[in-house]
Image (tube, rainbow, N blue to C red; front, side, top):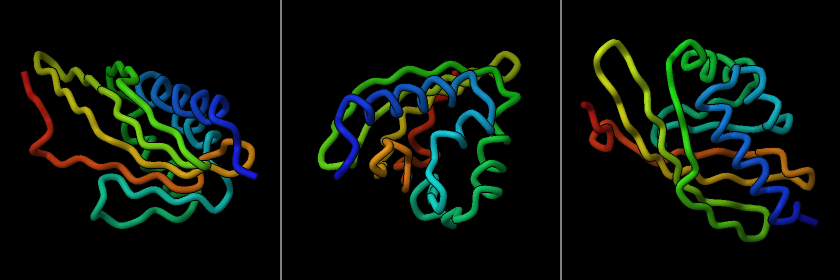
Amino acid sequence: MAADRDRILETIQSYVDLVGTGTADEILALYAEGATVEDPVGTDVRTTRESIREFYAAIEPLEQESRLVSARVAEGQAAFQFELVTRVGEQTYTLAPIDVMTFDDDAKITTMRAFWSNADMEIA
């Protein structure tokens, strides 16, 4: 039986919050054993906990904030959009990817695919 909608929404909110201000280990804790990450879609799929942790460790030192824009949950799966604002010096980078995830019975992420490209990045 798939995790219920409320638990999946809690995981999504935690994910969005932690991408903005958390550590790689905190984000990794949201993932099930054997999970995969494809971010962005079309890049190599990360299939080990080490490679997923390495991916999130790259954003850990950045000055960022994030917010959930919208989410849809159905049958242990979700698609959601969130906004990520990153400040580097005097520049601000804003990206609003759409992530598609599947979840196990404990609402842990089993797959994550992020839909975005450089053309979607706003720089101010």
